[in-house]
Image (cartoon, rainbow, N blue to C red; front, side):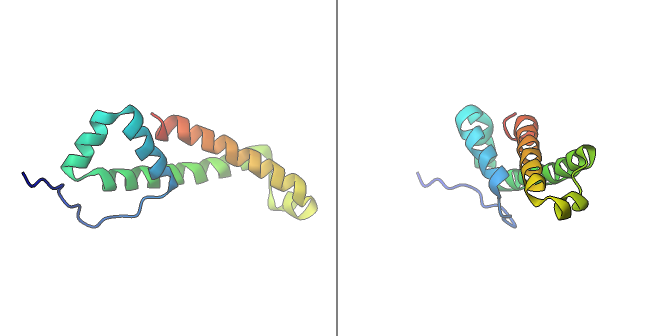
Length: 104
């Protein structure tokens, strides 16, 4: 038999967050992955997850930076401290997004 998957309309690009979620689906949620793939909705689903994750990540970075007092003033006064604190904030935000959205 000649089997082919349905084509998706308006294929959207999938970023790093969507790729991580795709890997999670393939390894841990095989039924959901297969259903999305065979229904032709996988790409739009991953693009939506990617958008949600990116928005959540940026919002968390901004909120945590404001809460911890990491400002442009600190950036001008002590760049190395600012870089270190922002790296910690990025790491924390990434862990939160991974736990709540990507690997769930």
